[in-house]
Image (cartoon, rainbow, N blue to C red):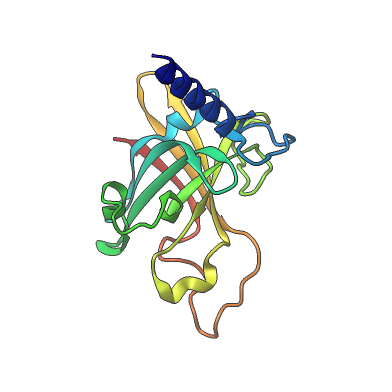
Length: 205
């Protein structure tokens, strides 16, 4: 019995150490130290979990998001919003990564998802939101196009997610998609990924 108690105490001690200190994802002034836990304390990421759809004639954008908790990135733990997407333009499928949403065997880690992030932003922070209130919190996520020929755009593309909830109406997600930072674009190469930059309003399915 004593051995069992000792093992339990060791396990509790390790767990506490592995997630200490706990820092809110909204706290931008906190020092993130080794083994800190960047936590979605108010469950703000939960608002974006699920399947979302944008349609405009024969053009559509489908996005699926999931929340991952206590993900370890070799330095600290964090709660993350991860997702995949499918974009069809004028009836032609341009890109589809949805297979990686449930079937993650082809992914080396959670960080290999096409959509990934937890950083909260306000109205004027990149990418800006002209119709947001001053203190409204959004989430900025990293975007990746799976086409290896567009590798020069990796690390420069971000989405600002805004959750819109109206009484009696299905929830909406506004996306402001833009490029930040510089990249060397080969002569004649596309200036943007298969999903064009811009604003999209998706309805929760």
